[in-house]
Image (cartoon, rainbow over all chains, first blue to last red; front, top):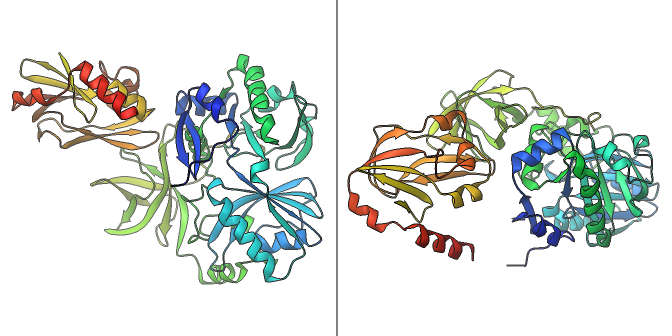
Amino acid sequence: MEALKRTPLYQEHLRLGGKMVEFGGWEMPVQYESIIEEHKVVRNVAGIFDVSHMGEISITGKDTIPFADYLVTNSVATLKNGEICYTPMCNERGGVVDDLLVYRISNKKVMLVVNASNIEKDFNWVLERAKDHDFDVSIENISNNVAQLAFQGPRAEEILRGISQVKLEDIPFYHFVYGKVNGIDCLISRTGYTGEDGFELYIDPEAAVPLWRKILEVGKPLGVKPAGLGARDLLRFEACYMLYGNELSDEISPLEAGLKWAVKLDKEFYGHKALTAQLEKGLEKRLRGIELIDKGIARHGYELYADDKKIGWVSSGMMSPSTGKRLALAYVEKGYWKIGTEVFVKIRDKFVKAKIVKTPFYRGSVKSKA
Amino acid sequence: MKKYAKTHEWVLVEGNVATVGVSNYAQEHLGDIVYVELPEAGKEIKKGETVCTIESVKAASDVYAPLSGKIIEINEELDAAPETINSDAEGSGWIFKIELSDPAELDGLLDEEEYKKFCEEEEA
């Protein structure tokens, strides 16, 4: 087995009592003291996450924008420089290779931010796609040169303002700037994965420890704490953001996942044909929110039943601290996905009553939907 | 005297009745507990069988019968406050009581010192 990779903050996590687990080939903190406590800190004040395991791929050259537009389903051509879009990247069957962020740095440069577990797969995929039409681009996996911190919560801007040398209030949602925080060069974006307002800071790996410590120091009087992957998963789940490997995979289309808003069928992209065909034929399954009426926790992979037959499966499920409800995201077959439909989740040997509900489960301080 | 199973349950025997819960070591590893699927009173159980399930934020974990017997009482409080197991696993976080059918099984359990050592070895 290959050794697990560690971020520049590994020793900090140990020092703070982080419980380390394997995640996508990385050794990451799942929690420090309590997942629920860290979740509450992010919802009420702000929490800091080490997300240095995320991957970054740089694309430069004359054909950067047309190439990026060919690569992903959302529109890069209509982005302004300094803007970001969330987007699926599809295979020829319309399945999702990965979901990622595209940072439009200039007319000749973009940065893709990809899931930690997919870095190699995505990099190879991007290299292959460039050959399809002989695009004039240079592609570089810069993941090892970039550390990333996410500072998320309703008071994130207020706390970060005191140590920022840029006007944070001038960064709209899904925009980014280059500037200094505590004298450290950063790419600062108003993005995140928690449903709360906040920032993602891309920095040199050597700057990770000093910046992490500084944010914790200035945030301490207000109750800022480090938050682990456990809280991150719980927060993104309540906001109904996709987790690759749960809601998304090579076999699931973005249309089925409810990401039609990020699929621009009026332009050409890889997988366009399959998605158009799927739309014309009609979807066979789609992602829905489920609320358990009877007790229990529905977890990833559990089966969904109605009319004595299997009609779907749970992609993520948890007890939601913000709503107090036992909730799940699930792929549900045609005929059963209407809001209010009664379904049953098979939990071990019991059939637990549930119903289809609206998503997202929770709306935080995030400015607007990307 | 409190005894422990290698599956991380604790047992406190008074007369012919054993109170059972999960150890403090186990609750620390489970993390925030959000739901306990409690067993039914009156059920006969055999040592080693799955009795009920504890759901933490991270995962579902089985609780095994450390001893054989009949379940005579369950801790209904856990239904409304499953986090009691986090705050007091080896006290008010008890889960069920068994009327023992074979008290000799007690000899197979670990005492506090032995269990502590066992946990340290598991950590290593």
